[in-house]
Amino acid sequence: MHIEFSGAAQEVTGSCHILRVGKRTVLLDCGMFQGRRSESREKNRKLPVPIDEIDAIVLSHAHIDHAGRLPYLVAQGYTGSMWATSATRDLCAIMLADSAHIQEKDAEHLARHRGEQIEPLYRMEDATRTLEHMIGMPFHTWFKVTDGVDAMFTEAGHILGSASVVLELREEGHFRRVVFSGDVGRNGLPIIRDPQPPPLGAHVILCESTYGNRDHESVEGARDQLARVVRETASRGGRVLIPAFAVGRTQELVYDLHLLRRDGKIPDIPIYIDSPLATNATAVFAMHPEAYDHNEALVRHTPNLFDFPMVQFTRDVTESKRLNSMHGPMIIIAASGMVESGRILHHLRSGATDPRNTILIVGFQAEHTLGRRIVERQSRLRIFGEEVPLAAHVEVLNGYSAHADRTELHEWLRRVRTGGVAEGRGTPTVYLVHGEAEAQDALAGQLRGDGFAVQIPAPGTRVTL
Image (cartoon, rainbow, N blue to C red; front, side, top):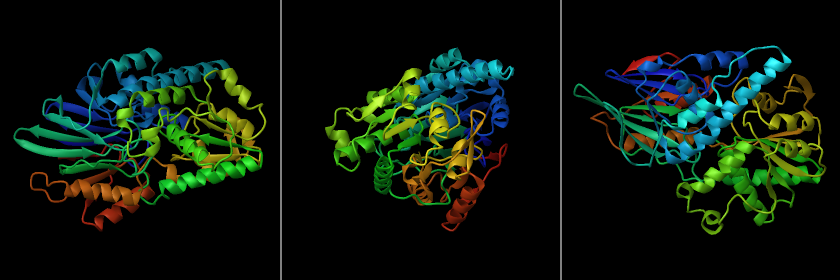
């Protein structure tokens, strides 16, 4: 039994871990690498293992950095099963199609304007065929992934349908239990349930470490900060421009803006959700109320969480362009979350130069992305090949992160450790993935001080279980 770390090893994007049990090979996620275009393009085209060696895939959740290369595997001939929760399957239906559409349009743009002939990683038909391989499973139900590998999903609390994965491996009389955290969420996030650490114990844990070197402000504090930013920007006559992941973050923001307006904490200004993908994702959220946290009053008492008078969803490109010629305070939420593509780029090109406006960052920004350069408040931003001066205010609300912080990750790991001893092992070995060096080193030191055995695998590292 072996695990090989292929993606999200000493980095944040491209999540992919290769599990080998006897003659069987299972991928845990197969996400897209993001960052520098040329470097990411090359990494995304490199298969984690030959297609004919992959027996099955287990998917933690629908975010593109975890699911984004699945259609590429299908395009290259993969015909096996992909296991996910039902909500993750439904979200992948729209997210993978959107990813294919963006790639096709990017290829057309480069061919037309630069004379570059670049084949998309995959096309729309590949994204459609991927759904034929996806099997939706409920939480807390064991299923057979392949010979010698059984799995169960538990709530990760990150986005709708997100899961941590418990895997039980058997080969020639040997048994190992592996827990893959996926992306661990936070207690108290709007809409979705809190994380539920797997209760059975483990020999090995693969744990994300995105925010392993810091603590977030509280979720309630982030909501208050959001209200402040909206009030201050509106008083200047400006607009709040929010790059947000179309799945999860957008719905959380709309939910909180609904609460704030209901309580009279923000002015009555229009809120535009300028993302066809976010519009479709919101419809998927509405399809899965079973995944909501019914301890929340708004969830219990409001028939439609995402539809109130201030909110308008824009699909048409003409509608989107019209927003940049409108006057007066407003809020625009648009993808992509790391400001690498999508309609937010158009809004920033026209809005970043206006000191009345605020660019509000509400999620993690990976290295070498435009979002990271905004967080660093660089004086000029390169958007569509143009140098755009950054004069707008920049606010960063880490309380909106859907990733657990260092304290929450530590507590999650403690609960996995104390949930049960796996085959006589008192303390599992923890492999930190999905994090940058500074965050991983800090979290590793903290965990070692608590008695955990911790490793930080590099890409290509292979360990024997």
